[in-house]
Figure 1 (tube, rainbow, N blue to C red):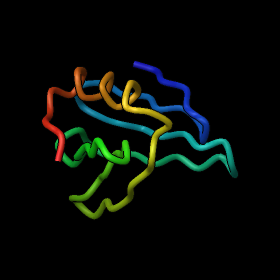
Figure 2 (cartoon, one colour; figure 1 turned 135 degrees about the horizontal axis):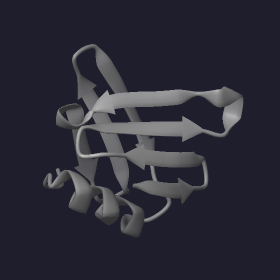
Figure 3 (cartoon, rainbow, N blue to C red; figure 1 turned 60 degrees about the horizontal axis):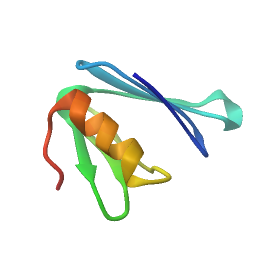
Length: 75
């Protein structure tokens, strides 16, 4: 799955999530089991296995697409 948002691109499979930021070619990566989703504000949170980052998406539609792919509940 590929989702474009204001800060870059979200690339996800059922096993992994990558965020490719437009600035400075930064890539945030985490295993799907380390991902949590928050609806308000729409955020992806990675925490586990030495990974810790979060990023706000533009809207809940982008988050809903990721939630459907990963099959995880919102926080």
